[in-house]
Length: 145
Image (tube, rainbow, N blue to C red; front, top):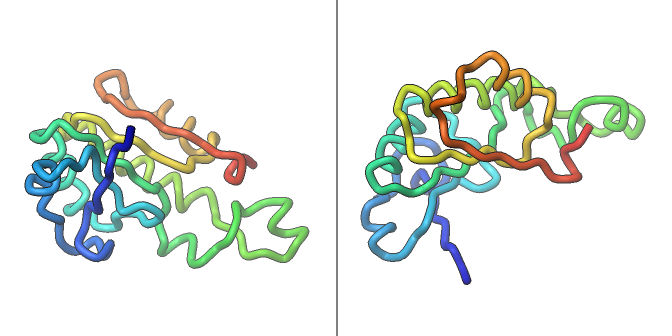
């Protein structure tokens, strides 16, 4: 069984929402700017509000690109050892904080934060009252520090 996911923003640019209602009518089961973070707080909030009315999940790649600046792997011992530009944990933490806060404010249907390092996510969750939020997350081997 397939679960089609459509873009949150037009051309993945974080400037304008896609027509989420029409896409759901066409069979889409969720929304994501896969591989990119929705950088506009206003647009992401609008997406959560619309997804709530449509009862579909929003899937977010939590990474502030203005902080990660083309980093290739998580910043740390391995990135330093191999001379690879690292992605600071802060780039993920600020978006995780934003997204959880917006979900709390909107009371959205469901949000999934993907490719998460455990440390920033765990710290963010501990600082928030997430009991009222419905969210999921996953980490994969290439983001484990």
